[in-house]
Image (tube, rainbow, N blue to C red):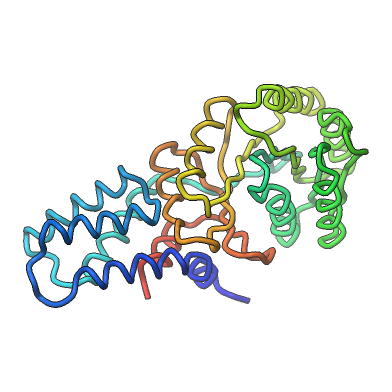
Length: 305
């Protein structure tokens, strides 16, 4: 079984390779740095989708240290960038605090294709391994394939799945799932909802209806509403998180498919701008490749050999 650091290194390999090649190609030999060198380094950081603000802070730090004579090699630059990334996450608490004396209801939302249903299944797998009793609710009633996919996940990992027919009322399915989870003394109920754009008011109204219905069935629920975004889309992932946060209450994010592109730096950009807790990151296709987010592991995987 791979270590946590190995999982992060594997998932962020494309981002790291792109960054390291660029930095190594810019800063070679003992020549004095020029403004062109700084601009190429800045472009390299931006190309990893670290975001303009984060890149500006790192560049300011590097420029000042170089002028003070503290930077001699490309390795010095990498060490500074790693430390600055870690600093961005100071005070960040990604830990999910499940209810100790009752059910925890988690609502999964996001656009189509973000990996929402797969992430729901992987979360159930993770908590099952920790000894939790987990139930799934297939509330993406628009897409028959999504219901089938979640049922397959349930069968694979031994989790009950509450579902209904194609086109059923999503709020009614969610209500039934909460009642079933309570009666069976479940620890966690994960509700997979239909993919939706934040601009589609009909679908956003349906989401709010699901929330109200779940709260009627179990006061205080849903305890968590998580947005699932495709990390491989880079800046688009940041835009989605920003816009969804304006129209519904979010407790945190899951970023998927970070292994699929060189844009893994978007994790930093999202947290820097929005400060949502980043609970889980998808670092590969296997169930165990969904990992709780760890900022130190993230920075090490991005910059260290």
